[in-house]
Image (cartoon, rainbow, N blue to C red; front, side):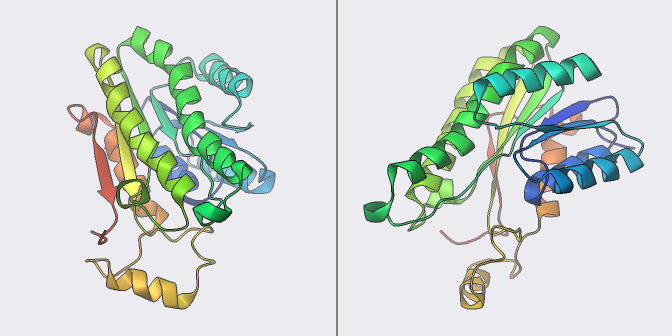
Length: 248
């Protein structure tokens, strides 16, 4: 039995990587999908085509996830088209790595805006809708870096640590009306972002992972589907590592 039949999911940053995997996995479980993307139009169209081939509806919406006007427009478009939003996945994010002493203000601001402000904007935009329906699930994609920290990623770690605190606080605000908020903290996941790392660094990461393999976007997507589904209807305010038990 499909876990998300009759549900509509909105996913930010859904054209590639973890966001793409989540969009496809939720569609495979019966959800109609809307996702945002920033610039990769061809990739977004490919994802939408794959989802429609499953017999599900899909909207690919080009929008800056950190822009408030665009956010509100996207949410209204999805509600108008599908009638409701049951699931929000705040996945949009970027890295602009560098040691703090060399980090520019632009590097700091761009990462905090893309990773943290976007989650604030989309959560705020869907919260009233979900509260009025007394149901809904918000899944925030964080990172183990937000828990453990990582040299050269003070901006990224700060954004993801803030996502964790945001998740826990928002779950307390929305829980009384049946809206759940959880976070997923992936470890080393094979995406376009991580494929550029040197082989020796990958080998070092493998030594630190109990399962002795790197994660895949599908690993994260499987957990996102579960958290969005009614199978997780007594789980909220949690940050769940999806890391193969990587060492801190």
